Image (tube, rainbow, N blue to C red; front, side, top):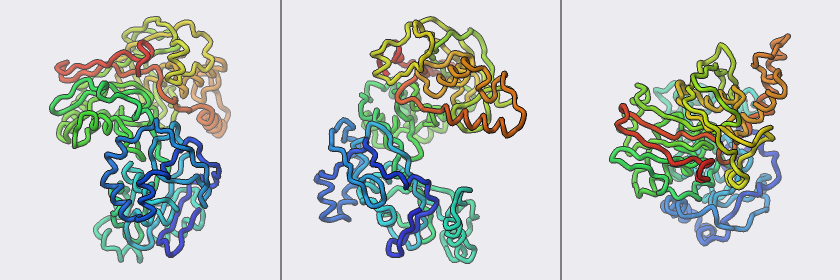
Length: 479
């Protein structure tokens, strides 16, 4: 745990344990030699303000293809040297989330720089990406917190301390602990404010490789229909709202106001970035609300194409999903109802090696790769990972799904392996919990780019609005 000095005006708490990683992240690149960075060395304050004002243009234009020499110099805190967030790395590095309590009020950028030993331009990029959050009052420490971390929490949240803070008068402690994004480098944070900094935000390099105008299916006055590429996020993640379909599609269309997401299921919940999807993005808050209402009233219909490793029977398939937000999702009996309808299932060629390599598709030694099966699916309930989990439970996992295909293969080889499978028996509850823990530790790897799943068709208002996505990657090689 890093403890800031009094001169820094910061205290870093609730370390996530990654500070012990000393090796540099090889995939990160640096812009240390750029003219903007040299200007920062001469005049740091004006450089930061200049960076912020031009960040949208700069971040939009820099390409992930830029070949900049890799930096291997380690900083004093054990991490590789930080300079900028762009060019985008080809792969994500290890996560790093820092938690800070401000002990003396001032501009947020200065506090983060001093506390975490990060350059101002890098922190400005983090703020632009939406990777920095604040709360007026520090949240409850996790069970793994050290005695020192607990002491700091009690000190800054003592009733005698909170009663003196005018910013939280009229609020309950729970209300004051709610987090919000920092939106400006000069935003003032007062003493006692909690900061959460995602130093290594999740990155989406495919955003810089795509011709976004070619992905626009329709652009109406109130909405845009987008053929979402695999390997991208619809509306962004908790630590990266910059590299998203909504942001890049807005720029491609020249919109001054960013598009807004309307499909909760297609927002970047874990796993959905690897799926091709046809999505509706609202141009206004009003239409966003209207479309949400159509979803609630079940006026929006969506069909999926799934490329499976084995045939799936035509008709309705019913499972029950474990009500815990951990992937891979487990299906059994007595949990949340999951229903889908298989409308068609036809035999198609297994993707050839060139296509598999292009989209990082792994076969995980599936026993028969002579043929695959393309299924048209109507989702009758909307659970996270539902199509993937249900098809895997039927012994027909989606091709390339690194989270569910290996688990399906393992279950086929050993029918008692699934901790909630019908063949599994336990003598004690602790044995059951241990089996579940081992299952999640063994499986759960997210696909790198794409899997054989596409939201291929969307319609609403009884078909008045009807749109189809183009052919999926396993047919045309385009994703």
